[in-house]
Length: 122
Image (cartoon, rainbow, N blue to C red; front, side):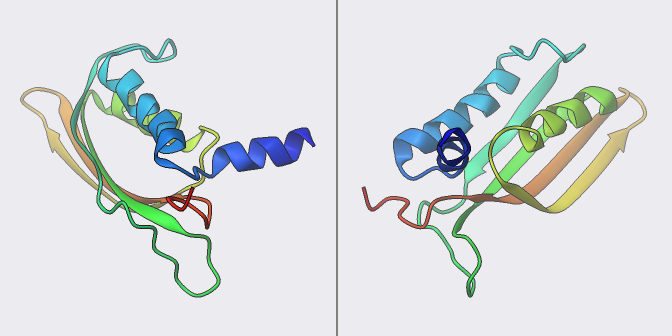
């Protein structure tokens, strides 16, 4: 029963449960991640559609765009923080730009955040 509950929690089924995922991004934005040694900036975060997409028999998902900047190690830790969360995420692409003058990296990623098939119907 605990595994089923955990699985349900991993797939947002409403805007309220999607908000819990957004809180993870806010934790990054507000520097509330204890394991991170430095600062990162959340330059962009958007759920690119509030209507789930389903391709064939695959799980429904929402497309998400996230852009982070900071020292490379900190940005990678932030991305790892999200991908190691309870949520199912499929990273589609990563675009990394490095500025040697400031020792900063800018990382833009687009990913699918998988949601319950009944997302938005509750």
